[in-house]
Image (cartoon, rainbow, N blue to C red; front, side, top):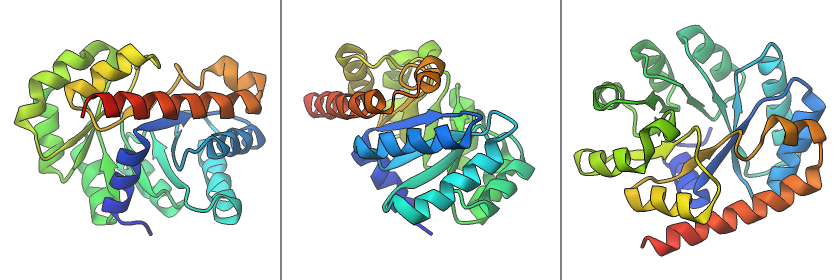
Length: 223
């Protein structure tokens, strides 16, 4: 079981967390393979459909067989029951769209990293009081880099990651990293439904290489 610090370091190093869901387990596996070939070593699979649990279990199995060093998160965890289910399914860490105290306590008691979604300072304070060290700013496009810049000095001990509406452009990425985020979550702007349905895995790998390079450049320019 990877330690929380190991996971945090992996997110900080990669600078982005790709996230997706698809009903077809074979397609999920090929998407992860394409991301892995592009250099990604930490991924969020989202709990957003009827096949989420069975597909996630399959991804964990494949990870153990053929993707050494890959860390798998489960996202969109909204209840204590879901947290327990996916902890048992082998999730390396768990990500939530909001901040629910009992969900955080369940994950913390299991010794796993919890990344709750927050939209207000009060929610961030509640998340921190429940043991969170990494915060998902959600939805990122509504909050914007200016929100992050405004709260950065209040929470110097926390890591932040905007998710939802982050644009994969040098300008937007630089704005986010300049505001003080540690990484960005990339969902439909990166792995859209169209991209997933096209099953053009070579293109996903190429886009992954380009995205990682763009993020590395954005991080470098803000140092």
